[in-house]
Length: 245
Image (cartoon, rainbow, N blue to C red; front, side, top):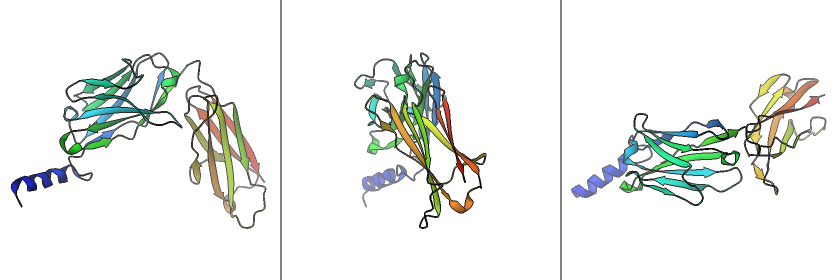
């Protein structure tokens, strides 16, 4: 095997997804800022140096396709895409070995998931972060859910189904981030929960569901089943309950 082929093989091995040199972008799951302030989104790079990579920033609103915000080249040049103007400012923080995206004067409409992707021309290595949900609070255009509905087959005698199924439906909220939690007999339930997709309504608002599946033999007699819907941007908290007979 010639020396350059061996060198290429070793280099590719080092940049394999399991290799120690593979960059790993790390992002917080959620960040919250008041409307009109400057949002600061962090993307810390592990197993790599930020100056060695270009960084892309992408945005995705619930129920929509991802959109590229900009590319920050390793030489400092910035390529912005579409309607993403100078409010979106990429920064390299050498001390924290992190990419930073500042969004100046944020609006409720800026609420979305933002994620970074590190990329190098050297063997086209790329690695993406998990994304950060940006929550903008205090805006006049934020709308709490217009309706929250809780449905259940708790009273149905279904011989073939040993499970209870419950559906919590939240409709007509904006922007598209809500948290739905379940409680039964005063205790939080996390197992058996299936979140639904966030759907865009005709008027631009959002709707979503959460389905709970619980074995019927684990039900408490005359216990209250509750779903709690927290809409982040409006700050609203809505609760619905059913008595399990």
